[in-house]
Image 1: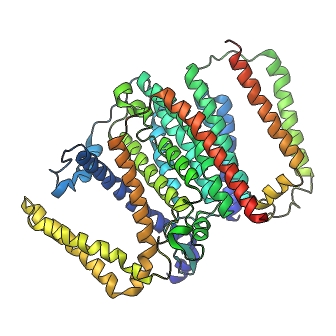
Image 2 (image 1 turned 180 degrees about the horizontal axis):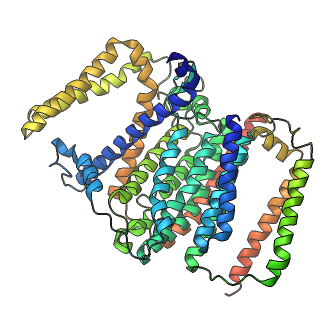
Image 3 (image 1 turned 90 degrees about the vertical axis):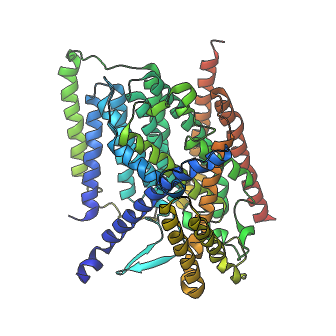
Length: 167
Length: 403
């Protein structure tokens, strides 16, 4: 087992642990903290794949900005611990089998596909370097990129309109 | 043993470097508190600490002992996980951010392992720094929330709002530098400023003066220092987010704050003031004696001040310290190899010290912002100005490319 694989397993365990903890925790703040753990572990996984820029942006945008807003809102609303209710019937009879089926399907498709094994070893700076990424964004994918920016702008304007309505 | 060293140099060398850096940074943090108290005292026509050791120089040591032996009470009904996590997280992130700072131009090989001055030389070091800064807000926010105290909570809320607001301006203000350098690596950004050996004139601060001002203001806000220290505004919030922390846990917040100040000063030096580059043109080799020219009079003054100090301890200690400083400076003149080697580090430290002094100076001079002023300043002034700076820089670069 080489070092990269060992690091992968450590990060993967952290990510899965964080994801489970996110659901199991009863306090919203603890759930949000678990989600941050998942984000940071994912950034580590991106780094392992040589995608430095994506890893840094993952932490800056998701770990930083988005989750700070989550925590801010939870703190501001002073949300308390959630109450546990009994499992709903639907979750018990339909949810668990469905979850098992979906997990099995994903696992089967990963195991079955040869593509996973034949993935090119993307070293640092091949496809994922900042320069290549930005060149691609502003040449080949410029329309989807600008369209997404426009969409975000519309969302921001929508938020302002909603906030202003009461006046 | 030798084979072991060569095989594991990639592990041993960074660990040794980290240990040395942590030791240095903790010492500098401690004496930064001393410097701050002294400078502010003199601004306010007081003496500052002067009982513990000559000129109060042992005050940081006394503070450290006090921090360790203080009782560490925990308020009732706190959220234990978050309460304990917050100071550790704050200190850890503050220390981690120093790992990507390059302190000097040297690259050297130890046991066949190539390394440089600074812990890690990554090619996206600026992004890594921003990523760590982005996480740093959790320490303060969690501390405020977990303490189960309304003053702490207000401090934590203020901090998270403030840090989100100023992070945008902070990130946008360095885009101008990135456009000029075309690189995320702090080392390359410094080397790009060397230009054609023009010295001072090649620094980014001249084309990027707007960017620098935005960066420095936003950096002060990110480090929660005066005039942006609303999260711990003691006249309104007792002590803000760290009201309920005592002993070593309080010390951790304190150390983290000073470490963040050092990181911000290092970053300002690297991005806008040429890092370890000398402000003089390369052809002026006589400026290489400047470190000695500064240090010898300083050392002689410490000796002179020491022999007439009021108590025996000072009369013994200060002349020795002064003699050591003078001897090092004299040795640098005698050995040109050593003198050339310390040039980069000397200028880097000199610039960082200048920024740290400005930080302290502002604390002694400026009043605190009101909260609404803070928000409208960040969103309505700083952010538009930094965006305008990005547009202006891009236009100039494009114009030069085609003109």
